[in-house]
Length: 122
Picture 1 (spheres, helix red, strand yellow):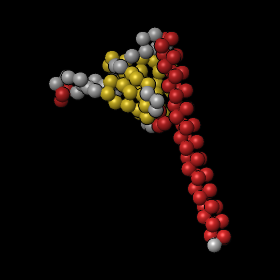
Picture 2 (cartoon, rainbow, N blue to C red):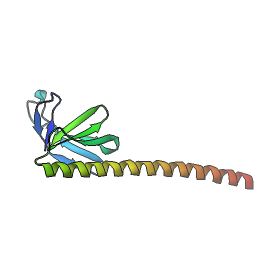
Picture 3 (cartoon, rainbow, N blue to C red):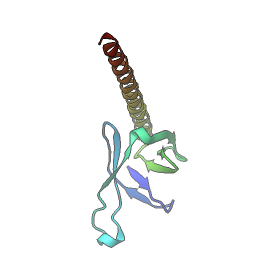
Picture 4 (cartoon, one colour):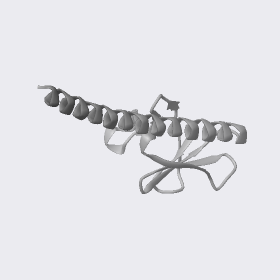
């Protein structure tokens, strides 16, 4: 896998790992580090707006906020697989977050009703 750098023309060979709720990718070494290892960075899939096909067959774009990230897979079938699995996982994470939020709201309502009933019994 390769990551398109901010200059818009340089591709950085990178390792990509899809975790439960994050997409991890290796970043290029900075000039200040003497060109030694750039480490890993990640994008939260809950903040992923969408995943799109790229300009070329092997590319896909991960849209997070105002900054799309463009990746290039080794083949067209790899691109399709990554596109599908990232989109599914991002959807799953968003649905999970919505369900957790709804659960918290319902728990708050139940607590309020229980408190009111307890107060009326006293």
